[in-house]
Length: 390
Image (cartoon, rainbow, N blue to C red; front, side):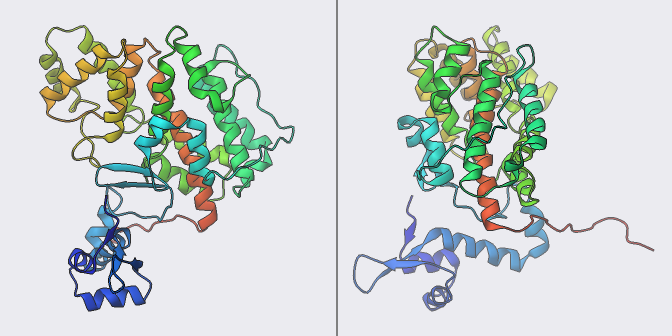
């Protein structure tokens, strides 16, 4: 990805003359830096993109602003995540490379605080041990509700307090998932593997990568929800609760459960094509294929599928996904590959969503911290199209 463009490329991108481009630079709208020679300059393409989108909104405000809430132009500025030219970046670092080389806990520290160390505070509030017979997600939500009433520190979204609270929230969810109280976020993938598939140590690297790849995805529905709630100065526990409500929808994280059901059916059928047709006929779509932000394929899914394909247990699922992709002529999404991972290792049906949620909660906490730092209430206006009074 070429972030810096020449003056000719930048002017052409905006559809303006070079003189107009230089005027934008003088006003501070576009950043520039020295080029290869002393007389040349290079211009930041992200600034150019933001400026072009603003020009489009000014030219057609009603249509552009209405469309902005549905896969439209960015509504909020963020330093956290960039999706550009089919690639995913966390604070400027390639998320695929991070998933292949770093631990989940290390990426969290980078995402939240750019690797700056922070202290974990304890004030005696503590987390209760999860009830053994309760469902993990329901138990986690119950604990969050209790803690939102008991822990006043949840309302402090400044650094370092929010970092400490956020870390403990993630460990609480991990407790609920593995049904143990002695958990460490640093060993999240290992502890999930021991709880779900104790005889498959090769699952650890897959789970670690999946958690990192699910951490954030720009202003998706749940992250936007989390930012709105954070902007209202709610507790960090309530921010995570709100994000979970959005994530459970079948058009978001809940899609992974549909994908799990689909793969279960495809495994037991001799007519894969017919099964896919029936799913489309009965539900109106086949879950887990095609993503608007990745015209050539979800890079998260590609990376995780490559890892899965290299394992002994994962080969049959990778082949099944490849066959379905060939029939539908659409690439797989991360939701489908999470389900394939779960089917390959005989994990619980709820595990793809649990992996998605554990990773994404880390993202919401990062968004909440950033929103607190930026300040302001997120409160869009509505364009009324109903019957006029009188």
